[in-house]
Length: 249
Image 1 (cartoon, one colour):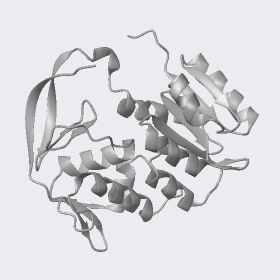
Image 2 (image 1 turned 180 degrees about the horizontal axis):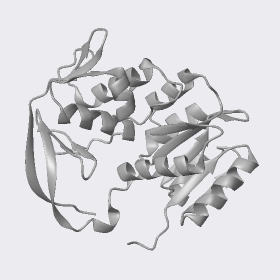
Image 3 (image 1 turned 90 degrees about the vertical axis):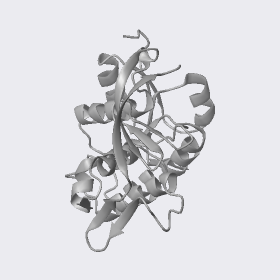
């Protein structure tokens, strides 16, 4: 295992929250940096290269959602929004802007830890094994290939297409069960959002973002189709293959 510590950058104007996050995750072996504002954040990300960004939606004089949008436009690092707002619209907007996840204050640190690990599986897929040769169960559909083990999607030109954690989990569920009609409650569970104060539009927003990445015409989807009054169905032609893949760092 690599000796390099995974780096969390937490931004919140509440010093007690920053202290709590720092103490817990440093004890868990992470490197933790904190800030009370997002001023100069893009430069700091380039310099410090964090693995995960935790950012409060409400910052003094700043919009955490806009900050998340700017970060996502320039970086694929994991983004988890922190919010004390019960308004689910904020949660939906955060996901639409490219955040991987969100947690509602007051949050349990063990739950936050689990969510960070889930995000890291997308953004740092087994970096200590980049030169390893292994067999990978790949789901293929319409020229695309989806690796559950590596949490990686490649388009028909064999180029990797970045997906957020929620997008990947949705696509994996769809492609693993082509032809099955998924209702929104099931898809909410697939994306690990059961028990939160969310509603159907959360799933709809993620499906819309996923369509933009895999559909030739997102407004006339050929792969992920809506089923009126129920949810969605995946209609791509799916096959599985065992592929020996060599990754290159």
